[in-house]
Picture 1 (cartoon, rainbow, N blue to C red):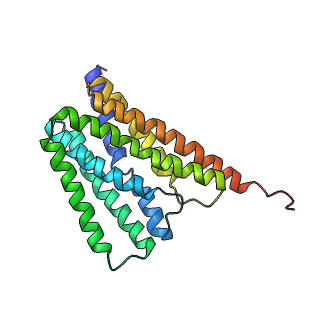
Picture 2 (picture 1 turned 180 degrees about the vertical axis):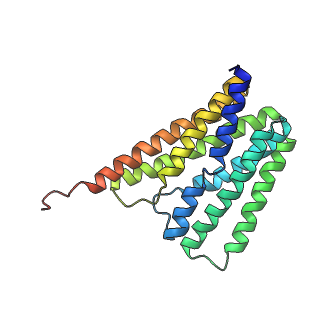
Picture 3 (picture 1 turned 135 degrees about the horizontal axis):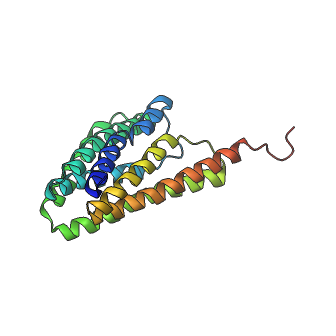
Length: 209
């Protein structure tokens, strides 16, 4: 199998996985009407970053990146609506969501018009937004509190990151490769922290029968 074919296969698998990345977390939030332990700011920033990647995919003539991130934005929006529902916000929810969509459109417009080097730098910096969930998971682990974090989402994120890391290295697309590497590292960190927090919650307290 040639390297271009490997890159194409990795992109195809990553695309299929990426389409469902935010979906498990959205389902948990909608089901439980709670997002305890979930970094709300991470998902808001992630939606804006994905909006920027749409324009990057169009500018770099990469339909895989453009299509994947379009659907990612939609599933992320469903997740954020679930967060507002869990908060019980009604009066300002519609205005808040319209504002968020406007920011997403602005991010796409900026990515479409700004110098590509600046766009790439901002997208890579935006990938660091995922560290917000790492911090939230650290808090969960330290406090041994309940968590609504979907480990399925982060396993899918890990697999997606690995696929697009391969794609970015073989295509080659350095921005995709670096962003995917950040995704892999943060996904591993969140999964390990959530697992440690789960074990800590299951451990009997001192003095319990």
